[in-house]
Image 1 (cartoon, one colour):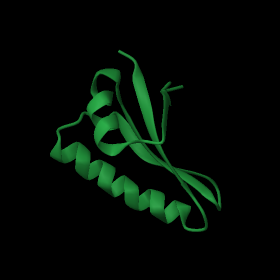
Image 2 (spheres, helix red, strand yellow):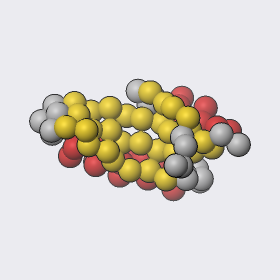
Image 3 (cartoon, one colour):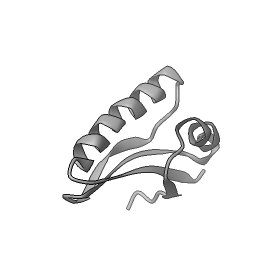
Length: 79
């Protein structure tokens, strides 16, 4: 089964703090809705751009996409 990385982008001087806060809500959602998240986290690319992400199996993606509206997604490779 393919794994997908759902991504929420945040920009601006507080992008990292916003992404960290959004990650809290992603983890709450996975707990409440019994989503089998493979991994989740925050990546910071610069002082002005960070993301929060959630990796799930493709079969779990649609309800999460519809409820949480990620900004983008990509196939997740564990390499």
